[in-house]
Image (cartoon, rainbow, N blue to C red; front, top):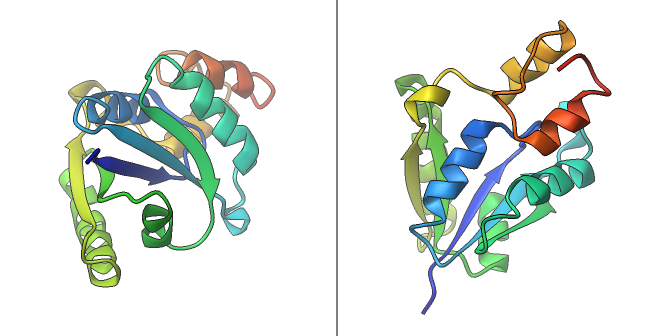
Amino acid sequence: MPVVAIYPGSFDPMTMGHLDVITRAGKMFDRIVMGVVANPSKNPLFSAEARVALAQESSQHLNNIMVESFAGLTVDFAKKHDASVVIRGLRAISDFEFEFQMSQMNKTLYPELETVFVMAKLDYTFLSSSMVKEVVMLGGDVSTLVPQAVQKALRGVGQT
């Protein structure tokens, strides 16, 4: 039986850290579904459709990854795809407390779902989508921090 995992997140925008996590996780699981959370109340920089397209283009070299958007509970998204694993990236100890609480809630709602934490590559421990957005808005260069497709999309937002 193939092991299916989900990798949920806002990916607004997708960073090299996200791409690194999904690339390494892709070696551990038969299939991974990146779930782009569609939550318009968070005032995203890119629409859910644009984030899906950017994630698809950025991960097209990975043959066991698919990308789609979802709204609602992560566990419902996992059930829809018969996933038994949620992938979560950790950059620092400060991420762990929130991620641990979320994994326990998911386990309570869907006992068959395991959470696998993938540690960020040292090069990306400081990197977040929020930081990328701030640097772009202030005219900074994020070309080494985001995939090329995202870099192109950000040109309309600020200088990259």
